[in-house]
Image (tube, rainbow, N blue to C red):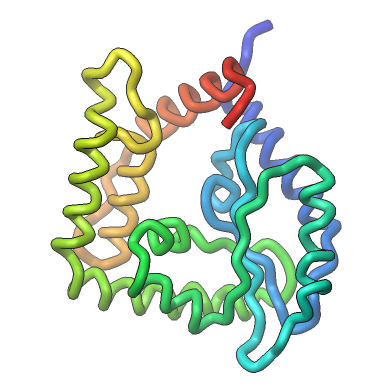
Amino acid sequence: MILEPHKIRAEAYSSARALIDDLVIPPNAALAATGSLARQEMTSYSDLDMVLIHAPGQQLEEEEVAALWYPIWDAKYHLDFAVRTPDECAAVAETDVAAALSQLDLTFLAGDKQLVDESRAKLYATWRVSLQKNFDRFIDSSIDRWRRAGPIASMTRPEIKNGRGGLRDLQLLRALALGNLCDVPELGAERDLLLDVRVLLHEHSRRH
């Protein structure tokens, strides 16, 4: 059987969305995606990364939040989630570079879309200020990652995600562009190649 990576990605995303579309979102709240779900880059073994955003001053009951996630756990997905207000989404950009990079992909899934739009606007505004203030630290963290993972173009077994020239660097370029520090070059073909390789690695190893 010939594996078609783009079809695997499309089917993985479609399956996840079908599950998410049946979830019952609490009132005055919204569900947003980050990570591969937000970018529609999932594989059959991808995690689901989501943020439940609620209005300021609203207290969500622990049981209410857990009930939202049970169908996802029952479907055997690995779930990474956070529960935040729009201001708390923005605050992440000041405190955690890795989390901020992931949250820059924040994408509406269900519920009150205005909450997601507000969170994204505040996140981007905070990110631009934070990047200007912490530029050297941000770049140093990328250089450290490159040193740990190596360059993917010259390695026998490259680290497709974190290696220099890998998928994480596509996010890096977008993060710099959102900070008004560069333009994002046209790298569609390169992105597709990296994603295809990652899909085939996941399928071959049958794991994330």
